[in-house]
Length: 116
Image 1 (cartoon, rainbow, N blue to C red):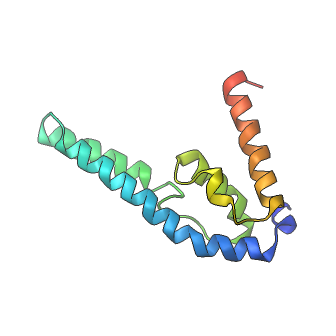
Image 2 (image 1 turned 90 degrees about the horizontal axis):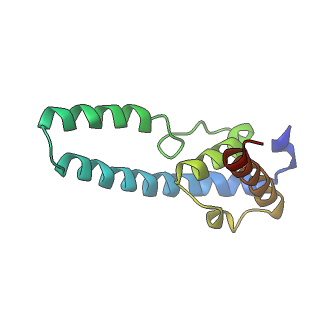
């Protein structure tokens, strides 16, 4: 499958970087939660809105990801989709991996924009 074309160095680098990416993403989420809780409205409404956000955010790869080499590309694509990372964060990865990511994200953007 696709994971066979990626270098071992990509997998090692992914494992090295994922924790920092997740910490940054969760820091962003925490700031959004603070904003939500600090806003106008009933305390109970804010509480339940936060509860719903937490339930959804826990499913994000930027919060937790299944760590297997076969899931690496999927995880990277999801991290990009969630806004946890950008393609610039992949600068140290192999050209092959970056090409795959570009191909999938370009395809997704075209499908999203044009319904291809």
